[in-house]
Every structure is written in structure tokens, then in C-alpha cells.
Length: 307
Image (cartoon, rainbow, N blue to C red; front, top):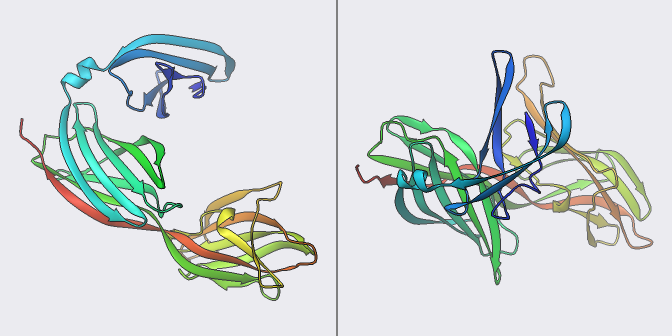
């Protein structure tokens, strides 16, 4: 499979916005394809920087004209303009783009808070014929004053047997408030406000400097603290300080079966470190919130104009 250098690949000098790839072996030959994010203009030139083909490294720079005119002529635009109040802002489903090759949904999320409370918004599509398979998507962010605006384009398979309507359901990771405090002495175990168990392992707490591994176990996979930046260190004077990633920062997530016959448990591990003011000692790690996966934040059924 060819390996693209995305930083040097562009359309009219603008970043391609990523894409997906797939490959298969046909008659003993590896055949692959890249599916790029929708091009931002009707016509232009694509430049692809290929740096590896299979096991062979090299520099292959390709450029060729591209036009969406034929596809645009076969694309039907359906205006939706439906907004949902979501945690920390407003999500608007702007329009659907229906073509014989794929279905696109344009979404805009306006975050009113400094820190977004909705992360990784998800959208599913279903028709009377069943769910429509997703193919990924791309997005861009911009800021207008205190409002962070995300413009997202989600890609799906083409609609089978052009339906009378489609149902769009919104989900995603939502930030919830709720304190978790793990002591750095004694058992060093705590149960989070959302029911997961967190243990502090490999603790090194020598004066003002320290580091540890946070291990979280969950059998639901629906709620997690985000990363080291969501943790703070409580010192022996009652002051909170931000946790920092240690030099050898690592993060892992895996699914394991702790005992035969038991359900699978997801384990999330994260290294954190800290440097406190001179004379202070860390006594606990504190987290004031977590991310929860919500499958249905709202849904809307769109009647499609018949061809």
C-alpha cells in the first residue's frame, strides 16, 4: 500500500483534510485505494507526495487536474438547518448531499464554553431499508470571539433504493462534572462518580516531584476521564496544581478478561507527573469531570424530495 505524506499532499495548495484507505490482494497482487475527504473547490490540481509503496521507500510526487463537475451534476442538495442544544453549545445539521456514490452530511458545532463539552460528535443515518454505513469524515475549526466553531462533513454510503425519508441521530462524547479523588497513601484506590475503579500504581512521590500510573477499569466502556490534562495534584497545604506528562509519557487502552467466565473489562492506563512548590508534598490526585458516551442526543427525520 502506498504511504502518503499528508503534510505535502494538497489540493490547490490547501491541505487535503485526510482520508481513508483500503487494500486487498487480487490475483496475488496487493491493490489499494485512497478515499480523500471532499474537495473544497469544484476544480483544481491535486498533488500527492508518496513516500513508500509496500516495503520500498522513495520520493514520488504526483500531480494531476481534478474536477467535481460530473459528480456535482448528479448530486442532490437537501437543506436541513435543524439545530440541537448540546452540552456547552449548539449543533446544527446544515444539509445533506446525496449522490450515486455517497451521502454527505454537513454539521456545524458552536461551542459557547472555553472548553468544549461535546467531543467527537457522532451521526448515524437510517432509512426504511435499514442503517446506512458510515465512511468517516473531516472537519475544520475556527474561532469567532469566545465561540469555537467546528465545521464537520460526515460521509456515508449512498442511499439504497432512494427512500422517502432519512432519520439522523446525534451522539457523541459529553463532558460531565463529578469529582474523583484518589489518595496517594494507603490503598490508593477510588471509585469514580461514574462507577469505574481507579488505582494509582508505580507511585514515586519524593518531595515536590512525583509521578504515577493511573489505571482505570470499566465494564461498560461508556465513560472515561480524558487524559493526563484532566487531572490535578492536591498538596499537603490544600492547594491544587495541574498534572503534567512525565518525559516517558505513555497511554494505553486494552480489553481483557480478568477471570475465566467473567465479562470483558476495559483498562485505560495513563502516566502523569508533577512538580510542586518547594516544601510541598502531593497527597491526592483529583479529577473534576469525565467524558461519557451518549448514543442519542437528539434525532430528526427528513422528508426527501422525490425524484
